[in-house]
Figure (cartoon, rainbow, N blue to C red):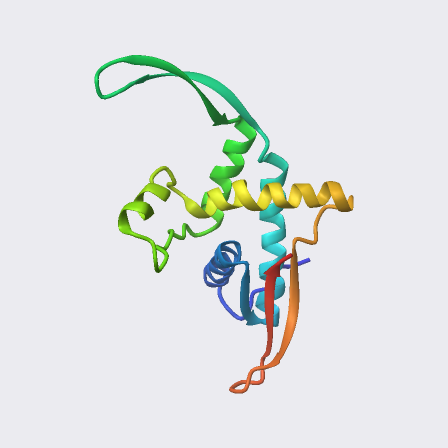
Length: 169
């Protein structure tokens, strides 16, 4: 089966889908045309499956740390295993890196503290929030897949295109 071209060249339609999948992971829903919604849902399912299959691959390692006073100490640190690291790097190449936005009532200091150790927030969200949530769902329901839904919204007034919304279940 050939992938949908969405009336664009390959680079253009892949950029559109990449942007929509990134927004879908970040906000939980995207409103677009029906054809784009179906293509976005398909890609998002594949990316989530990759994350779900590898998110638990972690190991504990002892690392040496030196504090401000020069005192050395050893701490146990949780690091990614080889499968999770490969999946994380692959997803970094497949989705756009959206950045955290400061909340309305949040001070600059608390925002910096909250986001200080997060380099790629969308990847962290996929592996730390979405993948465990859907892995738990797989255990409860017993079937994998079905992480997204496409809802038809009616036709668009200007060009009569069928609108749809993709959302994470």
